[in-house]
Length: 215
Image (cartoon, rainbow, N blue to C red; front, side, top):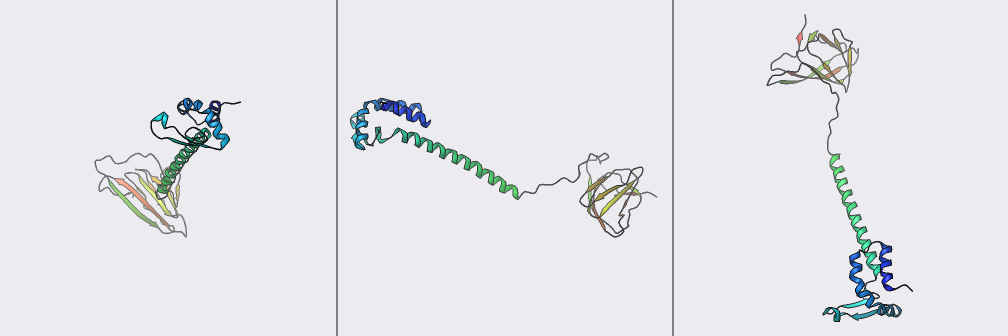
């Protein structure tokens, strides 16, 4: 026949939740009341007064010491641990959802062109210009050069750049291109029916002409 002491340890061991401190605290009293518990289990429960051990009234009702079944102790701890895990997961989920909600309203720039260039101005001050340029079908620029690099972004149509000694370069709508400095060039709208619109970005020394015509 299995003793109540063995039953206590076995129950907590199976539940894997009772710590050694709890078992050590209960063990001295458990053996003393083994017979009382066995009688109470047979009778369906008991009510006892343990004030003689502690000097103040302590009433125990149930089938175990202090009215607590060891299985209940282990099960309760399991519930507490489950609740803690649930709270932790909920907190992580809440933080994740909050971060996602914040990111939905954030605009992130998308790169169109990234290129290393030479010949940028080196003075203490630079002038920045942004120019709108429109070409009718068949239009072209003067034959010219730029003193500093020019970046163009095409809004509509196709821009063709012809530079001395190089193959023509075409830049379509939604794309960007760079005109290098000190290179003879001409820009075209080769289309016979479509308009070309672009934006040019120019960084230069102050009061520098946008282009230098070539005669």
